[in-house]
Amino acid sequence: MHITRYTDYSLRVLIYLSLNTDKRSTIKDIADSYGISKNHLMKVVHNLNKCGYIETLRGKKGGMRLSKNPENINIGKLVLELEPDFNLVECFSHNGNCVITPVCELKSILGNALSSFIKKLSEYTLADVIVKGDEKKAAEILGLDSLNDNNVIPISNVS
Image (tube, rainbow, N blue to C red):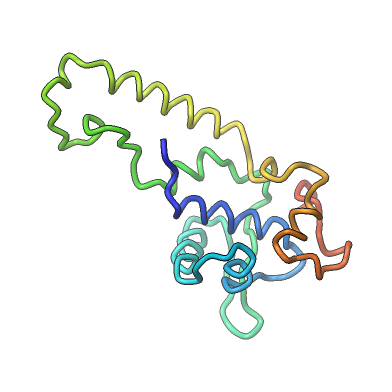
């Protein structure tokens, strides 16, 4: 099983935004905090906005923020929404042409494993990603430590 970089970056954006609730964040802020490309993040942010996970505002005072409470962002649902496919092996594809597909149980076995993977991810929300009580430490790691203690709101209290 492999999660694409696109999904990884999407999760990182949402984590960052869940920790920086006092103001709108920019793509530059997030790219600098994680040391990743702004160009990659532009596509990610556009899609997260289109899917309703974040709100964006253009202009001088623009930026982005979560549009949902972190407890309402299900990791399993998010991964299913963002991943282009879960064709683990050729027989998962509509145009796969493995000659032993009619007698092989690999597709069924891997399908069950994939189902278990998604089911397990679905047990978690964005609020579960950062260990409760470590929100301030996570914010410091991401360079949000310039915020005073009142600006870093524990994830469970974001509305």
